[in-house]
Image (tube, rainbow, N blue to C red; front, side, top):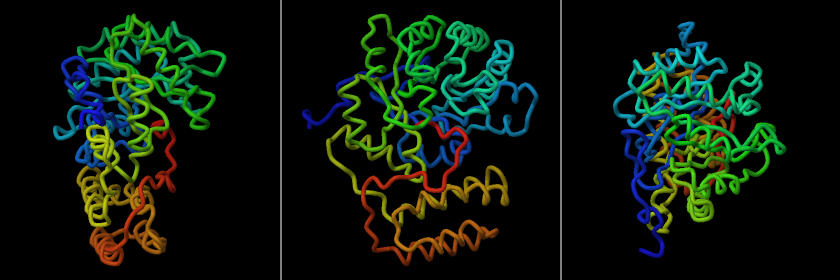
Length: 358
């Protein structure tokens, strides 16, 4: 056991007043994905810390309904963080005060989203082009809240402007209590291999004492352990690998602690979690919206089942909760003997405007 175990070699992780297990597994903030119903099933599957979808600071100030709804958190999710983005100091400071009123466990700043609609507003990864602005925005947020403040960012704007070691120092000096680094530049978007060697350089910097979490390309238990051993990160953030497969958290944790693999989730367990996800969505957003928003998830949950297309089509067109329950029961019965392969890729049919960079 001692030879295989990596997690127990380290102390617990603290972020402000939050205590996390050694080498925590974080759920990434994913637009149109990381809502309370999805977070609920990831929490049940073993996620140690989760984040909301990213929220526009300008939207919060305007009292935009969609932005305000993203502030919803539930006691069963804790610890949970709210993530905000923006490029204006005053707006970020005011939105931080608004966030504090819903009492999350921490507040995270998004300096990493690479999509055009965010970058064009001078927010997200656009701030990587102006590190001084990044520092001012961060200080404005830290001064405006008593919550622990964390940051999620990328290596740099492009391959010629990677200053992540300096950025980490300046974020720490600005009062950030943990930093998550997605190991790609903005110009890479979600393509190409993530370069974790830069994260290792941050960890090797003797000035850095805050937890450093890594993100990018982690989709198997083997990678989680390998990246822990090679790059020395304090934990990892999982994004796309959790979509349709929240069990990735428990499988990674089990492998990290024992060196052994758990069997993939069975069809019975998958159908049970689909139902839980669906019912949580209906309870949170109402019958119509809950059913409609669940439609983007069925393809990923059922990935790997042969000849499942007709069932999926029925699931994404049915307006009735009772009918959907019947369809799920049929799937459970007809595929009860199916054996899933390990590590079937997710993201089938998923079109996230900022898909969490996992």
